[in-house]
Image 1 (cartoon, rainbow over the protein chains, first blue to last red):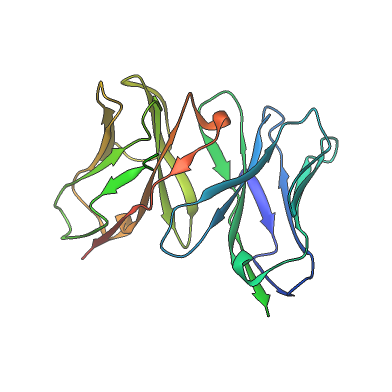
Image 2 (cartoon, rainbow over the protein chains, first blue to last red; image 1 turned 90 degrees about the vertical axis):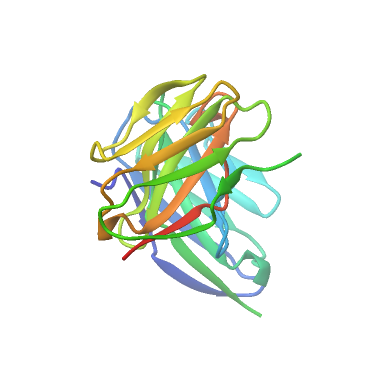
Length: 111
Length: 113
């Protein structure tokens, strides 16, 4: 069963706009929440990650917001650029040496 | 700094055959994980090795196996291939495990006919 639920499945945004991807989890043992970006023909690449002791983390145009009580976290891509067009995966992990991935969101940025 | 190298990049096999995929992690990374990626199931965890020891295994049949060598290089083997094994197999290396951040290879695209 999918331990991490991700939405939307796809989104289209204009250049300069904001892309928002949401994820939800049930397992309260999760304590590590990364986001990965994948381009066609490539493996996923780590974008940004957060731990539950902070509610927000920003790196450049990418921001993770984390709501521990709601068991939800989201990725915001500010000032979206055509080069951001990719598939984005949220994930969650605990101390069992693996990640549970969301189903992925395909982001298309229109110039 | 060299990335994670997976070989071969593409593979076509017939049902019933077996296959071995190889992964060379980033120098200094002792943890190697394997994931299966398909359009229907997404990214599914296969197993993780650290210093030649398997620390976790995903929910896959026993036909899927792996190992890690003393130089941290890893192989995974799939025996008695089925059509449903067609997928992109991704290797990820990290210093100590998933929570330290993965570096993924570009994967091996396996097609079973």
